[in-house]
Figure (cartoon, rainbow, N blue to C red):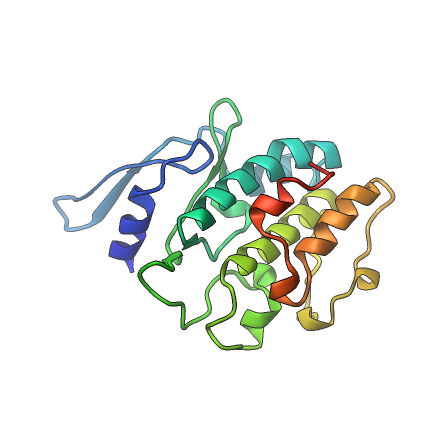
Length: 210
């Protein structure tokens, strides 16, 4: 698994993907990864310092646009991240967003995902229902991105306490008045229960909210 992570990560070169510079064994036979330094920590920590949520315009420009640029790059190379969450999004010294942690990522050019992976609150409904592996894996990253956008603006994820994801509808998503219609439409599109109906990262980059 670690070998696969290194093989996938080392080939990724993008301004919004944390760089992997080297990997080696130390004197204690432990694998050491030398990565780009993220001086501002992760997005989860930043959210906590901001009181748990951010203004929608800051979410759009500061997080979702660079995040989707990174995700579109990954997907164009056949790589699915499979564990999108605030803890895996880092911030550089000058606040540049960096997608990180490719421990459960897969390269669809070389393998097929046959097991589910990710963090439960961000996992798509088809993963929770154990649907066949032919489901489009990039769509699962899109779902997690929708959860991320909602959480950043509202202060908590839309899927809590085992809520059945397949029953999620636009009416079941509650937005505070501070979230504009375009942002709501963005989240609803990304959280389409049917993976075939979710837009791609490239399509979401053209969404009016961004």
